[in-house]
Length: 359
Image 1 (spheres, one colour):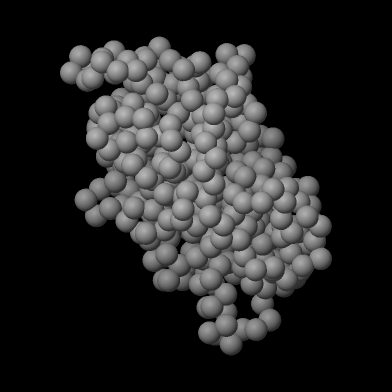
Image 2: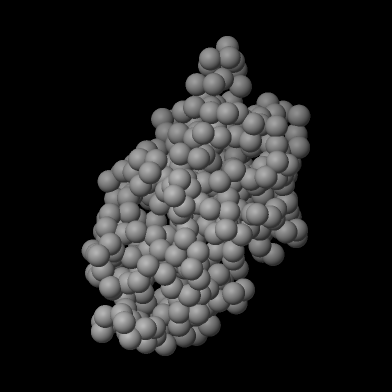
């Protein structure tokens, strides 16, 4: 879990107080799911993937003549403040990231939410009654405007010094770079709260100990997009999901307000995040910048013999649709993420365990 010292808290408070542009991605919320359907909320990085997964999985059931099994639906992290997730459910505050999705999962029953999309691993504060089901690999790099002043590659040390505001000019990195003020940007999910990718990125550049963002850091409301005005500054840099970037640029999975705009992802420590085949190379997903993407479920639901438990395992389990269906694998690749090794997809871990390897 990311812990903010006093300087970090004040820096984020400053960032939150800055003019956060009002760009909001277009909505792709589902039609009203039935009370018996499998419904998820949470991390934004996989919401586009799940919008397509829902369509394809439900079509798969229909094509196989299955008219009775629960259907799969997923609510976006952006949109109206309140959502009614299922028929008969009470309205809830829309979860906007991994942790708020997991909190919602544990605050309500399966008459409201069945799973939470998560871009973070289990934490010590997560209930042991939750299961984190591994789904795919992602990585987080940094992005900057094409044609701007940022170089093609930065070292981990450079990034740590930039985000702690010890480096404020490009020439502190190299005299060959422009004499211009660096504009480091983070995604801000709320007061003193970072978006998933930004929180992970600070942990990665701190090499296990999260970097405290300094007073020069600016904030944007949504992550993994380049449409906010501050991100058009030729000196801006921002954390960016590599999988989401590939899905947007090469897979065509964009919506208004949910695209990289002028941004391009850049290398770290001389390792490119995107290879010549427009995929994440194994070399990059073997670094500290790699992460596992999970779906979090209640242990009781997962292990039950009810139609709901059967449906959860049929979707997320090691022999389920996401891990075994060829069309699902193609969709995952189209959205920029990498498949997990055999046996890892669909594996589960509690909050008191460690997640599967991303290698």
